[in-house]
Image (cartoon, rainbow, N blue to C red; front, side):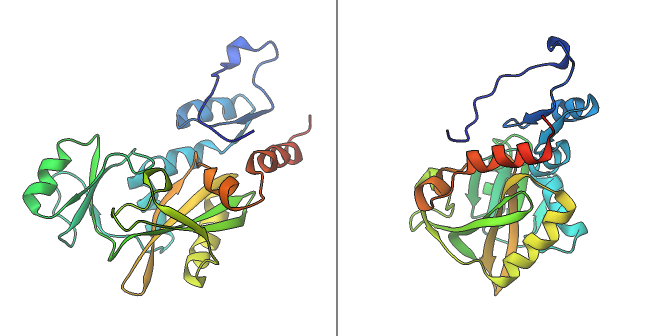
Length: 234
């Protein structure tokens, strides 16, 4: 079994005994997760994780509240952050979709009109490379470096190469600050690099696990089910 995006939505009204004990959410609807929690269900990941991690602006605000470095960004109508170049992306995009590079202010503004709920962000000084730290049950289980020699985006689904690595200490320091505050059950914490710094790029709530199956002997689906069982009295 692999973790995917297929889901069957079950409302509490449709269940004979009300809310289920546990819900493994592979959706991005934090309000639905919140309603299930209010009815007594334990949701993996929680509605807080879903709300913060599926909106990049919320992610950056969360990071800044913890003193975690992120690249400068702006909303429509605000002055552009340092650049060019810039990255124009949707607050709600995933997997490298709705992510574009702009080389001029005019291009940034034009691309912003084509993207749903756009953000304009400074480009990471090191392009085509990022790092994902997988966290399960509050602890890191694997770190993967992704790189591309033909795209500023290093997403594996867009052709980026992936290798297992030991994460740098500064990235692990950020992970150790995020996990106790956000408390994700299973997530990918992504970083970009430049100027001797590591920047938080995003936290993937509905994180893909293909790289773990390809590069490790881990079975994240089984591990997640074991985590659910250990947290719920069935």
